[in-house]
Length: 324
Image (cartoon, rainbow, N blue to C red; front, side, top):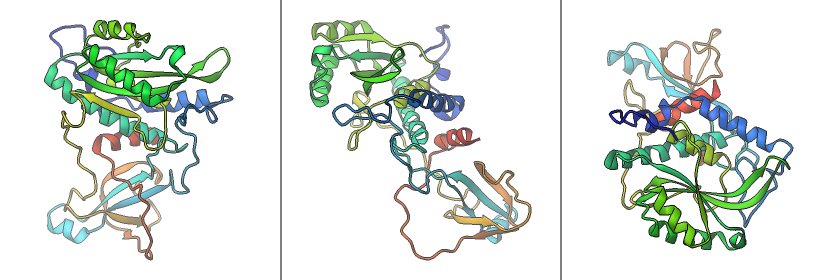
């Protein structure tokens, strides 16, 4: 993770929200996963119930295009907005880490939330976050992950780490054998002195390594999540110390569920004319268009899947770039 060298400059570019990051980051993640899945044991490797992301089949609706919006053209016209329909067009996502189709959406959401949390604490402390790899010695690799986490937490306290996030990686990749193998380690993105934590880990047989620099906190989280440990019932990113949920409150981003023209609820809509106003019609789009030709979708009663589209504004921008 790089920062500005000029001491008078801020870390704004280093800590900027996900929507301001290059969309190429997510494409790089997809490329990384594709490369490291091809002719490897990515799909089958397992360690104490932990697996890698993108190993399960998607739902039949994952990745399908859907159009929602507000077609209250009469109301919009009365409000002085013009006879317009507000349209949101997107690909549906289950946001599951294990989904082969939606794992990048999951990474985008997790990395965005994590970046905002680190950024919020930086605004208080004005200290650069550190990224360390906390490696378990071979003699302890057979111990339960729960016990390894307890030892890691104890060592973090000794190392005077104020707080941060931890991402568990059960595996490493052998470039020579082109295979993944069990080698549990933890990635720390947090606040403290790397020298203090190094001394603490040395006493317990663990070892610590400063990770290579990346362009941003967001990019760092994207990389870590691309091959992190995944297991049902466990969070991929956990927080401790001053950045724990009980000690640091971060405002949630507003859900994009209402029309900005009239504040009405969105509903599923479709277009029924020869020339579609959104060309091509299978692209991420959000905005007001001519209301002529738009209609509400009427369906019978059905149970809506529990994974519904309601991303935050930053995440929405990321997903647009990924699909285009």
